[in-house]
Structures are given as structure tokens and as C-alpha cells.
Length: 349
Ligand code: NAD
Ligand code: IPM
Ligand code: MN
Image (cartoon, rainbow, N blue to C red; front, side, top):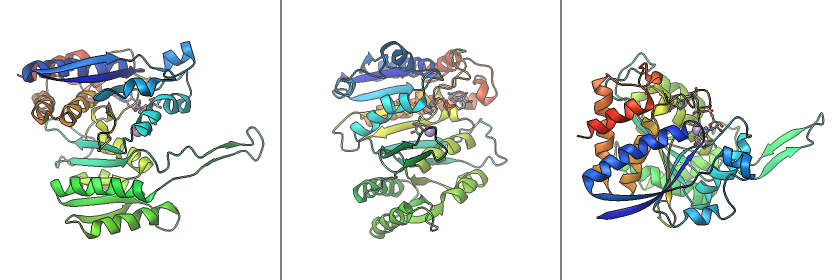
């Protein structure tokens, strides 16, 4: 029997509701495929921060490092400032473990009514740069409380950092439609983006992939007006963040989108988590859509070398949505997180 050790961080809010849902589906599929999944749960969260003054222990990253993968729910609680919780847990994991690729697929599943007038197929992937760009640690708040107060943050785009994410996206596009869109803002305002474009153009030169670039503002409009024309989109940390919620929303709900924070070289564990956050507005009611977390679990199995088991999970999500009887309130239904999860487990066969 193949076994994998998984570090599980449920985190905050609906993270604590969708992680058990994903685990139930993982357990069911693991039994069918004779996979051993050994979970170790780390109760690192904002509640923990309020108790102990830290989002994770000082040796937290060392504790995670030996695992085969990390599965995370969500981080964030209105009682703790977001920059404290996120720089204290989520961002250090992505950075320390060189998870520089953030893969965020979005698909309009048959049976789901998206918010758009079109029901043309949508099946795209946002490839988000995940460790540099606009999310830099350089800068801060100056002259706090004075009339001239300011906040400054440097964007950091390095040649190796842009090259590796663009190469990843080109390889992915070559295996899909052969088309790649690069999200940019090179019309003279943002200094980093002409550099991004230059690297994209250089890497595209020796590739079979047809690369086009779109300004991020116009691209957002096009993803809403005609999402079916997109396949793989590569973007910087911030552009990829915004595009991934947008792409999820046009496929029905941001509760459905999964993500894989990948360290492609496998020097460190990769991390799998839904795209959505802790959703304090619905937390504790048991109505969160677990699809983002369940689909992220499928991406984790794929990464661990079990594409068949992963496809079975995505197939069970699709079958449950196509059947149409059970869905959570964000998709217009009345099912609880648990009821939807049970339906997915039943659809596994
Ligand atoms: P959010 O994704 O938590 O919620 C945005 C909206 O979408 C809310 O109305 C919420 O109810 C809804 N929603 C989200 N997931 C849903 C689901 N599974 N089912 C049904 N509805 C869902 O984003 P936000 O409100 O900007 O952030 C809330 C907190 O989460 C903040 O503290 C933020 O920093 C944090 N956050 C964490 C992560 C992460 O851990 N990766 C990601 C995004 C936001
Ligand atoms: C995400 C989130 C995070 C991000 C926040 C919570 C730091 O929005 O995973 O999409 O911007 O990366
Ligand atoms: Mn986001």
C-alpha cells in the first residue's frame, strides 16, 4: 500500500468546515484505491494567536517540512488583523517551501448556472506567481498618525522568478490548448510590467505555444464577457489573485475554486487549499460550499502521483452538480456542507 503523510491545517472560519469535508472524500477515495493517508493535524489559527501570541510555533516550518503535502483550510478572523494572520502563517509557508506556482483552475460544471448570460463552456487555469511580485516584504507605514503619513511597498520581480513561472505556464499550455495569455499592465505606468513582458516574449520565442498579452483591466472585462475563449492565463502574484476569484465567480461561486501551491522541484512539500478565505459572514452555520476544498484534495492526490483517484473526485463533484438535487446556498440550493459532501462520497461509486 502506498502511504503519504499529510499535514492538515484547518485554520479559521469555514476552513474548519470544509477541511473535514475534503477529508471525508479523501478517505473514501483512499479506501477504493488502497492508499494510506496519514494525517497530522496542526491547530494553527487566529484563535491560537489570541491564546498564544503566534500564528504558529517558532519551529512551525520545521514541523511541516518532512510531510509529503500540506492541506490548508483558510486563515483569517475579524479579531486579528489580516496582515498579522497572513504574514504569520500562510505567506511564510508559500515562501519558505518555494511554492512559486499557484495553480487555480476554474470550470463551469454542467448543471451549474453561472452568473453570466452565456453558458458556453468555461475551463481555464490561472497560473499565479506565488512568492514575489507585489507581495513583497520591502516597505511599510511611515509617519503613522501624521498628516503626511504614507504606506510604501516595493514590488520585486526577478529574472529567475518570472522565468520559472512563465516556463511552467508555457509547458502547461503546450499540454492543453497551445494558447497562453499573459496578464500585464505594460502601458507605461507600472515599471515592473515591461520587464515581465520582456521575459514572457523571450521564453515564448522557443515555444510552440501562441502567447498573447492583455492588460489586466481589459482582461478582467474579457473574462466576464467571454470566459470561454481563455485556457491558460499567467499572472503576477496580485494579478493572479484577483483573476482567480473573478474566474471562480464566473463559474458560479468562489466557493468552488481549488488551488495548488506547488514547489515543482519537490525540494519541499506543496500546499493545497481552496481559493476562498475564512468567510466570517457564513462561518459556523455549516453552509459553506466544500467544492473548493474537495477539488484541492484531488489536486493533492494528483501531485502525489494518483491521477486516477484525483479524476474520480472531480468526476464525483461533476456528477453531483449535474444531478442537481443537492447544492449549497451559494449555488442556489439548501444543502449543508455535510449533505453536499455525503452526495459527493456517494457519487464516488
Ligand atoms: P472570503 O473568500 O472569505 O469570502 C468572500 C465572500 O465569498 C463571502 O461573502 C463568503 O461568504 C463567500 N464565500 C467564500 N467561500 C465560500 C464558500 N466555500 N461557500 C460559500 N460562500 C463562500 O474572502 P474575504 O471576505 O475577502 O476574506 C475573509 C477572511 O479570509 C479575511 O481574513 C481574509 O484575509 C481571509 N482570506 C484567507 C485566505 C486563505 O487562507 N488562503 C484567502 C482569502 C481570504
Ligand atoms: C488567496 C488569498 C491570499 C492571497 C491572502 C489571504 C493573503 O487571497 O490565497 O488568494 O492574496 O494570496
Ligand atoms: Mn485571493
